[in-house]
Image (tube, rainbow, N blue to C red; front, side, top):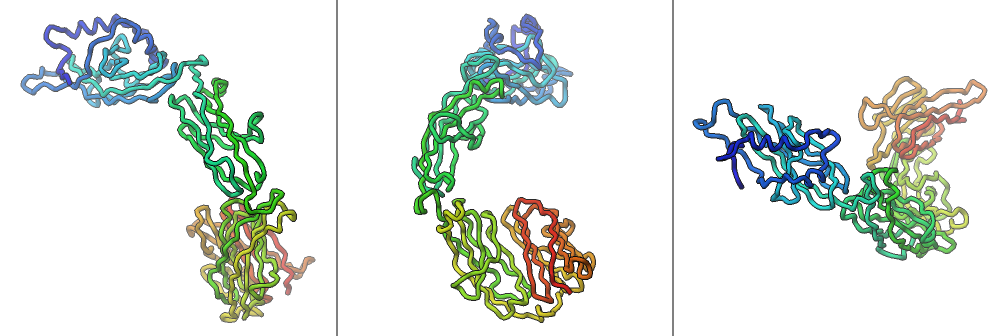
Length: 508
């Protein structure tokens, strides 16, 4: 690499170069951008080599002369379409007020053309790439006192496209779409892949689906310009259908340029029911059920958990209980398809019993398809009387239990957050009839409970009021330790916990 200490090599005066630069157009508004095409077309390219200045030795350096700091040059973006704009930016000298001259070339070895007619004091400049497709190179020269200078690193910018569409709009190349499998069963996943845009003219991809290879396609999803595939799982709603897909390449420029979007060929995917019964009905996979703990005392809570349906074929879950592992199960509750657990508090009515639970996965399609429902294994929970729970026993407050209305009603809560983490709410008493729970930090109130007696009023019952300041999954369990009655209240994950008011006819 050539090195230099000054703009004054033997037989050459800096003033000569400066005069030459003054001959260049100086009426450029730098915010608007320098026209690179015009710069390169002018016959003023110089056979320069970017150099690093070497400071004079102390004994030789003229007094008061300062070599500027070497600027670091960057560009944004590194690739644009024909007619696009690039910003060149460089680091300033932290000690002196240097001036700068940016240069451009069509080859990394030059020849180089200055972008401006006079040196500038700023540290950035916009360049309009009104040139043909190709790669262009830039560096910037920092000039200090006594004509000493130093050059930055060289950066390149790739210009793509043909400039079609006018106004800086460039239509992306037509993508080619393919599919990993042209026939799948419900629950199986297939991958759609499309060719990348080698010119960087695609702002985003628009993937659509239709029941025919032409016509109006419905949006599946949009993807960033660098994405070239999408994995899709067939659902029961598509059983027996042939789906057609196309992908559209949308150019930069928004609505001004979207008329230049291009679309791929159409690919077809046939969706079959697989092992399910016909008519579009698809039987969900068999769930697996577990319990923790398997033995509880009256008033304690246990959690039933079951495996999720990875294929999205379950319309709802039906949880049942029985006194034996087989036979007719009684409904405990139904749950949305995204739910995979339920917390239940053992009541005094179950003391000394072993309870058996199963969960059923019901398919979409209502009564037409419910013959394809599947059920889990049975799990058992032994309920002991504990330390006097039920049948007149009082509630004992603890870290996870509120005891309200003279310690008659026990209130407990469990939660499941967006990360799948579960736990019991931490109970904090407010008054004899109310309290709240926190889940994550003690300063963050999540849910509130209150008991009100209307036994002497017209309704003749107790009122249970529950409310939340959360959208995580919550299961509230309220137990009347006098009668053994227990009820659960659930808030699904992702839903705001709305206030619940529930009358309990357990007076007095």
